[in-house]
Image (cartoon, rainbow, N blue to C red; front, side, top):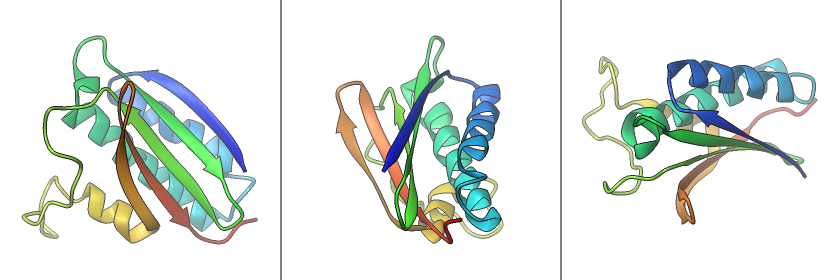
Length: 133
């Protein structure tokens, strides 16, 4: 296993930067389809951190972690946490919803996903499956 982590100041531009970082890391190690799936999961988890946690407040930050495993890529985002409940699928998010579908996308592209409290906040992770290069 090989792991990389990067700290981002919170904001929409940081989500884009995190996607680019993830793509650069996985593009030559996995197939194009898996690289796109990883990029999408990174986008969803980082966006959730910025929009739904204290990471989105002034001075906020989040950490993106990427781990290469023999059969999957683990994407994890550590955010500053929230007083709300743990991340969960939004039952009200339909196909036409403008928001609330992110964790459904993460679930569809992952063999497993979850969250855990960490010293600095919450870590949300997803094991993204696909063909390795």
